[in-house]
Image 1 (cartoon, rainbow, N blue to C red):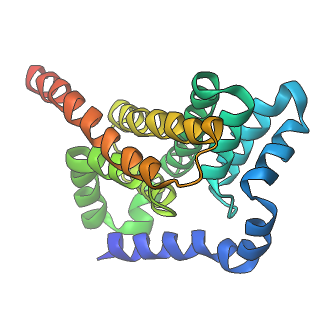
Image 2: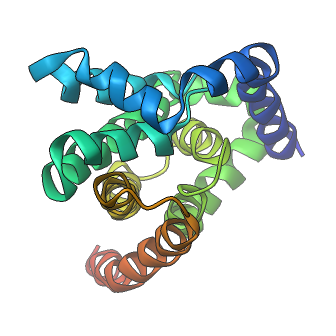
Length: 212
């Protein structure tokens, strides 16, 4: 029960900045606005873009527009790599901030029983939760925090995050580079590619667990 309350609590917490500043950020961060803002940093545009993607944890920044802007500025391959790594770092920050609370801190928040159930759940299906949530709004941040609090395997979490962040980065970089106006295909690819990659990686974890 506390896991569900935590999920909704984190969701509401992350949505608060959207309710307060959402309209202002939407007006500022159009596709053209993102390109102009990134270009203003010259050779440091890649770092500015990554910082924006990391700040998406706490601010209503449209990450897809930032990634598209990086694709416009740097091209599909370099822009996609920067966008994917920015998304990866953002997910890692959320995970490690919550994991740093330790088992004792997690038990205080969740209680021993819910914590033990959460650890078991995230180490069984946490990879799927990460890859399926990454292309959605709000949920990536929530899942990252919950995965860290429930002490999901570091290797499994970061591989799942990489399997979802990189494809998403390249897809949106392609949109920005090609000037594609309709992002429907990007959403579809960002939703389908990560699960396929994770489906390929999952047997590797099962083999390792059987050896252990």
